[in-house]
Image 1: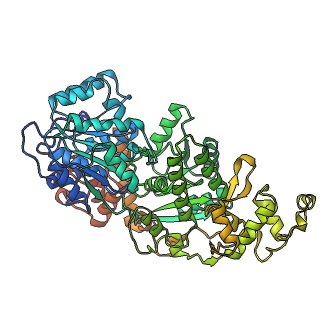
Image 2: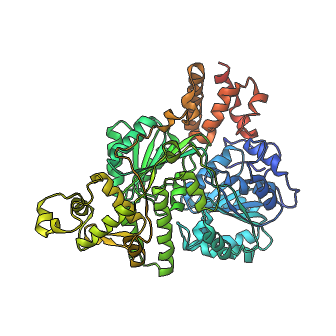
Image 3: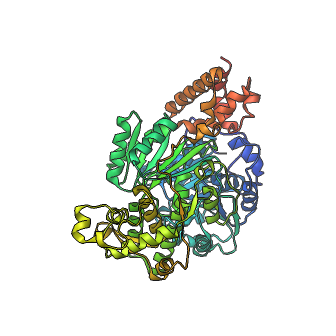
Amino acid sequence: MSTPTDPTAPAIDGPVGQPVGAARRPPREVLRAVFGHDDFRPLQGDVVDHVAGGGDALVLMPTGGGKSVCYQVPALARPGTGVVISPLIALMDDQVQQLRQAGVHAAALTSARTPEEVREIRRDLDSGALDLLYVSPERLLLGGLLEQLERCQIALFAIDEAHCVSQWGHDFRPDYRQLAVLGERFPDVPRIAVTATADESTRRDIKHQLGLTGARAFVASFDRPNIRYRVQVKGQARKQLLDFVCRDHPGESGIVYCMSRRKVEDIADMLRKEGVDAVAYHAGLAAETRSSAHTRFLREEGVVVVATIAFGMGIDKPDVRFVCHLDLPKSLEAYYQETGRAGRDGLPAEAFMVYGMTDVANLRRMVDDSSAPEEIKLVERRKLESLLGFCETTRCRRQVLLEYFGEAADACGNCDTCLEPVESIDGTHWARLALSAVYRVGQSFGAGHVVDVLLGKQNEKVDRRGHDRLQVFGQGTELSEKRWHSVLRQLVAQGLLKVDMANHGVLRLGPREQVVPVLRAEETVTLRADPEKLRPTRGAQKTGGRRAPAHDLEGADAALFEALRAKRRALAERQGVPPYVVFTDATLLEMVQRRPRGTSEFARLPGVGKSKLDRYADDFLAVLNG
C-alpha cells in the first residue's frame, strides 16, 4: 500500500490498495489487518464477497450496523481505487480520518481542500496510489473528474446515503439522479448503493434511478436492540428534557433536535445554565460558530449539541448515548435515521421524544402547504400517520418501528410501552362527544374552549357565545381536563379532527367518510389511557441496567477505564482527531475486561488492526500494566 498522506500514519504490512493487475486480497484478511476484526457481522460478509467478486448491490443496513465496511473492504481487496460518493463534507472527512488511522491511503475531494491539496490528490489518483477517494455527487460530475477516472483502474463505486436519490426518500438531493451515468460509463466496475432507511417504494426508486435494476438487494435487520425508545406527551417539555439529560445521562454526549432555530438557541442556553456542556447548531449561525460546535462535539467528551435536522447526517461519532426530539420529526424514516445516531458503538443508548397536538398540526400544515405534487403529498400524509401511530401506540414501540420497514419482531422488553405498559380503551363514547362538541361550537374554536364546554365550565367566553346552552355542555365531566386534551390529540392523530394553525389552532372535523361512521356508532375508536401524571424516564435503573457498561464499572476497573480514556484523549489531541478515531469506548472496555499484558494479546482486541497496533500498543499497555 502507498504511503498515507498523513505522515504519522504507518502503513500496514502488505498491499491494501492493489496495483493494476495484482491478485485480489482475501476480504477477511483485509478486515483483520486493517480494521482489527476477526469476522464480519451478519450479512456484511455476504455483501463484501458479492461486491469484491464484481457484483452490484443495494444494501440496507441500520445506522451503526457497519455499512461502510461493506464498501471499504471490497475496495481494499480489489485492484484499483475505490470511489465513494457521499453527500456531506463532515461525513467524508470523518471516514478519511478513521481510514488513515488504520493505515489506508484515503482522501476526500471537497471544497475544503486547497488547490495544492486537490492537485496532490489527483496526482495520487492518476498514479494508482490512492486506495479510497471520497467525493460529493456534485464534485464527481464537474471539473473533468469522470474523464480522469476513465483513465484509472477503479475498484468500485460506492453510493452512500443512497436514499438521497429518491423523491420518496426523506433527504432527496437532485444531483444524486445523475449518478446513473456511472453504470453507463463504467459498465465493468461494481457499484454498491447503501442506506440506513428506505421503505419499499424508496428501494424500488433507488434501483431505478441509479440503473441498478439487476443489483442484488441485501436487507439487514433494522433492529437496534441497544437503543431504548421512549415517547412522552408534551407536558413541561423543558423539565422533561432536563430530567432526562441531567438525571439519566449526566456527563454523556447526546443530540437534542428542535424544529426552529430560535428554539435551538433557547434550549442550548437553558441546558448551559443547568450545568450541561451544550452547544447550539443550525444553518443560521455563522460558519465559524457551526464549525466550532461540530468540532467540540466530535473531539470532546460529554458535549450535548442542540440542533435542527441540518445537523447529523455527517456524524459518525460512535459514543452518542442519547438522542432527544423536542418536536416531531417529519416521518418514521427521519426518526429512525436521527435516533440511529445514538449508540453506534453497540453500547446501550436511548431515544427520547416528546410531542403534542401543535407538532401534529404543524407537520400537517407543512405537507398541505408544500408545492409538491399531490401524489407526493399523499405519500407524506401517510408517512405522518405512521409516525403518529408510533407515538400513540400501546404496543411495543420496536415492533411498530420494525413493522414499518417490513420486518416482524417480538416485543422487545426494552421500550417504554414494554417496561410500563399503557392501557388501551374503547374510546368511542368519548370520541363521539368530542366530535359533537367541535361541531356544535361551529368548528371555530381551539382545544381549550372545546374542553371547557365538555366540562361545563362557566366563563365569559362560553357564556358570551351561548355555548352553555349546547346539548354537549357539561357532558364530559367523567374525564379530567388533561384526559380530554389527550382524547382530542389522539383524534387529531387518527385524522378524525384537524387543527387549523392558520386560524389560531381552531379544531375542525376530519373527512366526512371517517367522522360520520364514528358519530353514528358504526365504528369504534381505540384510545390510549394516558396517565394523569407523566411517568419518570428512569427506566434504566428500574429494569436492571441498560446504561452504558462504563457506568457499571467500579473500583479499580472504573479507575483503569478513566486512565485509558485520558491516554486516548491525549493521543487524539496530539493528532487533532476525535478520540473515537483512536479507539472506541467499546475497545477500551475490552482492554479493561481482558487486561492484555503484551502486544500479542493487545493485537487480539477487537478494533486493533496492524496500523493501530504499531502506533498505540505501547502507550496503552503502559497504562494497563502500570
